[in-house]
Image (cartoon, helix red, strand yellow):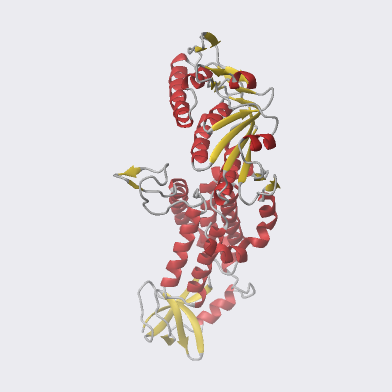
Length: 495
């Protein structure tokens, strides 16, 4: 995370998110006196491989990268899950540059077996099992449905290619992995049939660590160990500091929030628009702000960007408020504020990893990024937040148009517009004050672009033109009023 954003973040959200920050702090357990020299991060992979587990793994990998850990261990017990989520986890694990290990604590079926192969080593607990990775299709009622033969062949081919890539990268036997996926494959070692054609390969810990061939190469597993602590010693990290990444319990909430992020942005835009068009601060402004807070919270608990972007968004809001209420007509302050808000909305849902390059890097850096003639454009993936923001803005256009056309004629708008910022001045009082200034000529004390300030006698008033730009020092004449976000502004023309 960017350290220069820490003060802004602390001022904005430290108190509100302090309990969550404490819950996110991983447990540490020194295994000797050399804890400062080596660090091992242990990430739990439990339950089904679904979106919530992505956020746990992502948070664990980022924490390990920030701590410059030497080893990342996946503590696995799963019956499998979605293939697309598994592919996403492949990419996440690939970003960690230290040693990666899977510890099959009990079961690693289906997608769990795929993820295990994405790490450099596999170790298994006594009486544990790995395999049975053939894809299945879920029926509409949640049960397993029969997959058409053509679709089965197509899916098997795609999955075999993906898992074969991981196996080649980490030095596993490809035929072993394919036998877990494809029932048409037969697996033999030293003249012994380990998996007959028509079966799907599933291995116990003893079968997985059995050695074959002249080189006595293990079939899949590097060995059987009784616990994570024993594994850490086996890997050569005796005395290292063990850090257990704990699930927060809000990963499912993060999944739901991310799914509805365009809707949250739309509600935020509409709420703030209505608040902008009415005097004072009311329920619509609160709803808009609440929607945006939930939007940023979803990115935070999902292990995407940190809460520093909330601070940037708040800074943008403050700059826009300064432009509207205290220094109208300057433009530059409001524009900077709007840019801050837009950047924060995008970055709040952008997946950023520690030490990720932000500019084209030399060849060999940022392995997961596309390269063009030896140049690696290692940038974060902005596609999802930009897509969500674009959807929200496009949907807001017809909504805002309808509100602008019909809202001023509704009783609701009249009720809101009847109050000034203090909430006590009536429509009649405002109208009387404006009527008293109709035709009055004053002097613009700030540039009117189109809003600004003008002096009428001894009174400094907020004014707005009909769209034209009027320079400071010019004489202006009051011709009416405009009801907007500041209450009633005087409508003026150049005299």
